[in-house]
Image (tube, rainbow over all chains, first blue to last red; front, top):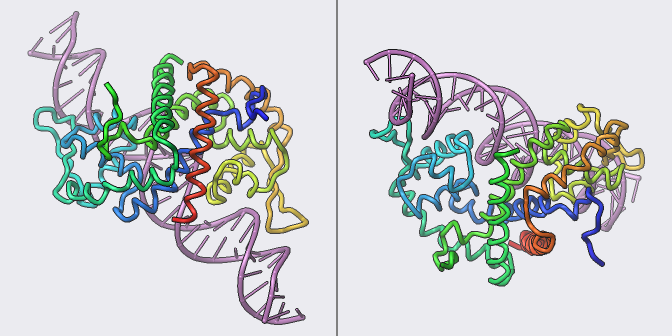
Length: 151
Length: 151
DNA sequence: TATAAATATATCGCACACGATTTAATTACA
DNA sequence: TGTAATTAAATCGTGTGCGATATATTTATA
């Protein structure tokens, strides 16, 4: 009755697969909700970080979302083209590009407010499980990140 | 001291973000390990399903990995080009394409055997946490999948 | 048994995501 | 102070992922 046998190559035993599949399942739930905001899921995450704190350099957004500039630069250009953010070279350090919300970008927050509630409803997990998952996954991510460099 | 406050738009409160970030962290860990096998992570998952059961239609692989044909078809063509699998129309049902391992594909399993152990080491979680995560994430995914259709 | 509906892949367009590299600006330091 | 090292974005190539659609085959049904 225990699904976790000792075969090292069984899909069921792969924590990474559980994470991978859950991530895609989330994406499929978010897509229709975010279509209404005309945002993709990674774009939504960027907007969330900017709603938390406006006027950040690309590097700072990347650190929070664990994304590289090669991912963020085109994404931010799309958000700029959509009129939600502005990209400006920092006069104090011309290497840095600061991302600021436009009025439209700030206003979008209202429409985004009930997205988490909608997602929470379909996830159908009690709050204690959710908190435990967030904590476990955070620890997992930290361990993986910490060990990634010394491989 | 509790990170889970009531702001509905705080990144820290997003279970989906925890899953998303952990998924990418896993990917970054897997990449160097799978480079030795000349496989990407999704290609590796396909090989795992075939090592578990050879000779499957595309549809069956898609159901196990929660992937669409639009993702699998090009991926399987790359595996075929790499000489690891063969794609053959099922003579009993010409709509279906059956995927079978080549000799090289079967032999690759040996080299893949210690990948999970390597990943397990850097994850640094005790077995009970891992099992709990797999179960919680499986439940989450099932709930999300079940509610995806009736949205 | 024609024709409609369903099924299995394939194709296309778009948007990530990353590693490797490049460019430009700043900082360190000999 | 001038050159090297570092830092911040951007660019490029490859490979996912998905929704929408197309094509071919099989099944259902009028």
